[in-house]
Structures are given as structure tokens and as C-alpha cells.
Image (cartoon, rainbow, N blue to C red; front, side):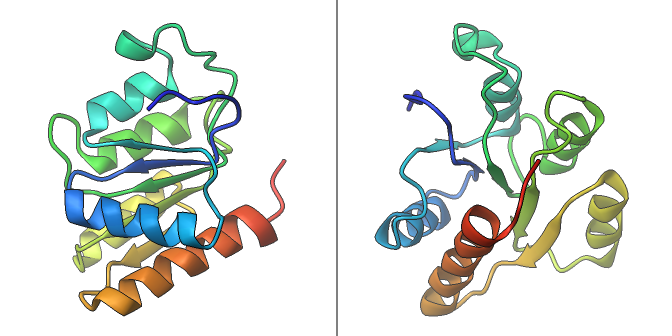
Length: 146
């Protein structure tokens, strides 16, 4: 889905069911009028840096929030996070890792790389929807960004 202006959320999630739940929760609460979902890390980087199929996109128009899974095909979430936080064009975009990984090394490494928040996906459907809704409220409505 190509954006028609400011992208509010870039959702990087390869699990179709988790992506659908997140999208529904955000849209239900009118928190993502313009959301782009990609299913792997390589496409996420292409989108962010206006490469490949997104080469015609204006790379200066960045998402307000990136929701990032860690376990992704092609380029994993850790590499996406590293690329985002090490590039001055994207470093200030808040990145929230939303993952099933409870590994302490993943938590430590993501914070070392500059993640803004690390959330373990709840298994329960209702709790998952609540977490996504709260993330949207905080990062899109309450948090002040430069």
C-alpha cells in the first residue's frame, strides 16, 4: 500500500494474523489513518530509504512510528533497527519492537541499538489488541516528537 501523505505507522510484521490484529486495533481506534504494512525487513528498508519498489517515494517523508517484529525473513528486525537508528534521516523515528521473543539478549541488544520500547506480544487476543491500542495512543497522540 503506497502512502498518500504522511505515513503514521510502518508495521513490519511477517505473521499475517498478528499484522491483521494490529491493523484492526489501530484503525478501530482511529490511530492509523495511513498505515503501511510490510512483511519482511528488506522491504521495510526499501520503504524507509526509498529504494526498489519504493524508489519513487519521497524518503524525506518518514513514518511517525515503526512497529517492528524481530523475527523477519530476508533481513531480521535487529538489522532493520540498526539501519534505522544509524542513519540521520531516520534516527529520530520512534521504533517499538513488538515481538514474541522473551530472550534477554534480544532485549539488551535492541536497547543498545536505540529502540524506543520493547513489548512482548501477548498471546491472548484481547490483551494483544489492548497493547496495540495503547501503543498507538502513546506514540501517536501523547508522545511529543521533534
